Image 1 (cartoon, one colour):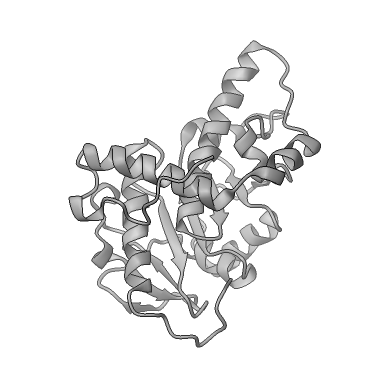
Image 2 (cartoon, helix red, strand yellow; image 1 turned 180 degrees about the vertical axis):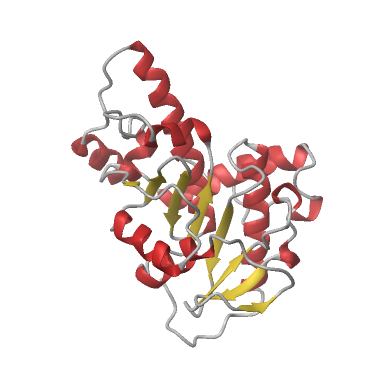
Length: 256
């Protein structure tokens, strides 16, 4: 649930969001999904601000205390540094869609190619891609989305979709919170990878609306997100990607 405007952030909630964003960013770098650019954000409890990394901070070494608190108008309220130039991607999505609590923008080339090939859309073929059974639009602007107007144009392209491809550029994925966003990003690129492999074998049968609905009927989205988080954070911790105190952030092994 999105808190009403003006609601105060409970002590520790914003700190947890910062740690989750830093952990998710590091894990996506380790997974080969995020690189030298791209960014995750989370909406704060008052609904009028977001947390996002500073533009010059290295994703692979992102620290919670370095994450900026920024108004939806782009003003840095707390923290040192400048937000990414594509802040309007995040801010305008939060303005328009109150159900969205976290946003990812990244540049995963094996996924981006589906914005370049005529007649070969990125369709859901894996069961966890049922999240995008309603379609994945392609935004026609290949440039950086660096102005509020461009952000609003992206919002118009997305409509109510949970993800979009930016032509010749990258991806945008939205979710209700950081954990589900992390799981969605992982599954989004998994689906694109499997689709590319399947297309080499022959005609592809996409997940039908009925199949997606059947899967969603028993799928525990929050539990699955915790399961992925537990797995990826354990792998990242063992590899030294996450500092020891971060182990178990949002913990819980979860189950299918």
